[in-house]
Every structure is written in C-alpha cells, then in structure tokens.
Amino acid sequence: MATTTSRELVTVSAAGTEAAAERLARHLRRGDLVLLVGDLGAGKTTFVRGLARGLGSPADVMSPTFQLVRVYPGRVQLAHVDLYRLVDPDELGDLGLDELLEEGAAVVEWGERLDGPATARVSFEMLEDDRRRLRLEEAPPSWSW
Ligand SMILES: Nc1ncnc2c1ncn2[C@@H]1O[C@H](COP(=O)(O)OP(=O)(O)O)[C@@H](O)[C@H]1O
Ligand SMILES: [Mg+2]
Picture 1: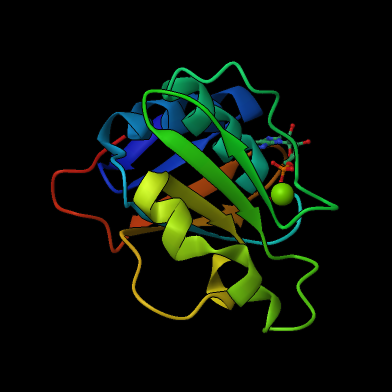
Picture 2: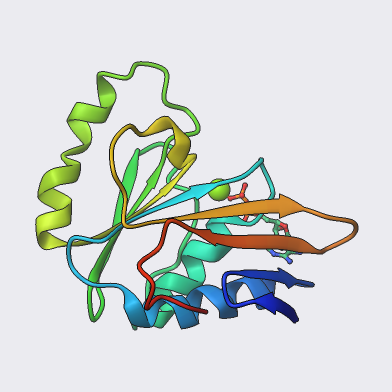
C-alpha cells in the first residue's frame, strides 16, 4: 500500500482497502453520513466491511441486494445502504435515513444518488490489476486513514 497524501491512497488488494476503512472507522460517530462513489467492483462493499470491522461489528458484510439497508451493531451502529438498484427516488424516503443517523452512522454505496450534505465522501477509481485509488473527499480535517 503506497500512500501519496493522507487523503489519497492506492491499495493493491481488497485487504488493503478493508484495512484503510478499518482505520477510518476510528473517526466515525453517531450522525455521520459517509458516501461511497465508484463503479461496480471498485471496492465499495469491501470498504464497508472494513468500517464494520473497525467498529467492532461481528456482522458478515455483503451488498444489501434485496434490502436497501442493513444495520450492523458495534461501538457505533452502522447502517449500510446500497442505492444501486434504486429506481424510484421516493424509496429514499422509506429508508428512514434521518432516524438511522439518530441511532448511529450510515455509509451509502452509490452515494452520488443521495442529495444533501454528508460528513465525508470516499471515491474509488479502478486502476490496473487489483489497484484501487481511494480519495477521501469532503471529510472533516481531523479524519485520516
Ligand atoms: N485493491 C482492492 N480494493 C478493493 N477490492 C479489490 C481490490 N483488488 C481487488 N478487489 C476485488 O474487487 C472486488 C470489489 O468488490 P466490491 O467491494 O463488492 O465492489 P463494489 O461494492 O464497489 O461493487 C472484490 O472481488 C475484491 O476482492
Ligand atoms: Mg457494492
């Protein structure tokens, strides 16, 4: 794993992406909303797996294919939202995101489909082979991985 700046890093394996998320999880608090932006297979779900582990959740993290959201217990509760199959924007209202943020933090795959302010945004770029460039965007200054 080669770090270029504290806000950008290139991982060379899924384990590297998971480890970066695990470190970032130290900063997560109740009410935090983290948006993940990147193509299919870029590593968003892998990143959520690391966040959950960092929060001490024993949950088995997979894409919430048939549900929009899955909730993992931990030091901070983590709501895992995947908007890939979102067709009707009205479904967003059914999510109850505000309530989930009162109970814990939330991380959203395909986060660009969500309007409004977020605590942080992580973008994923697929490079050659297993390399992924992760960028921590719009995060509080104290956040790092
Ligand atoms: N550096 C890397 N970071 C994350 N995933 C990687 C990396 N290299 C290979 N992979 C593989 O790419 C796939 C990423 O899948 P996933 O996390 O489900 O992506 P997404 O949720 O963005 O569609 C997994 O099969 C993972 O093992
Ligand atoms: Mg995914």
